[in-house]
Image 1 (cartoon, rainbow, N blue to C red):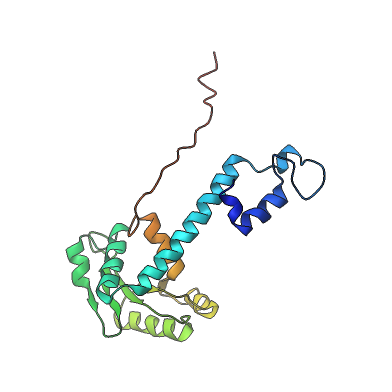
Image 2: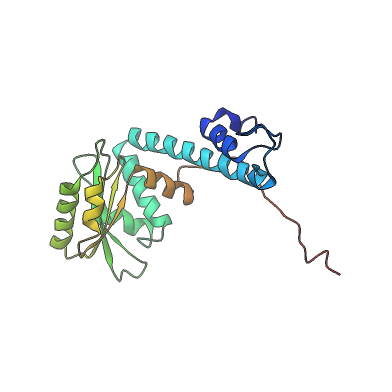
Length: 206
């Protein structure tokens, strides 16, 4: 609790929910259902730590060299089940002249379908015109699916556009990229593990 009190969001959350010590929005101790449970505190702390880690990852990706960024995207797609082998994925994706990567990769190990990829380290928000160009490139490659990755973000117009076209385009912004790296253990390593247990009611039933 002492650690969590550093965060303004948790202090606000605790003020709304009340505390076990009776400190809340009113003078009287809160009801039981208004108290912050240990599970809620743990979940809040985990969410804060994950958000902080994601922010650090985004900064590291933006500061990475073009070759490291290329390798990062290839390895992430492989961990997510695309491309088959790293050798196949490495051949499918080549460097471009603007510190990004563009290419195609197998959707599955059998190569039944391909996915066109565009990944660049943009700083500004990626708008609809850029996504339209990518959709046009898909048509030129006779591809129906694409993944567009940026270290920044996509505008609302860009996201709205991909929902209306025939091609399936997945938009991965910097936040989503960091989350995928965390979920697939890429560029991160476990620091601590906490196992939460509860009573096994069946064991105590005679």
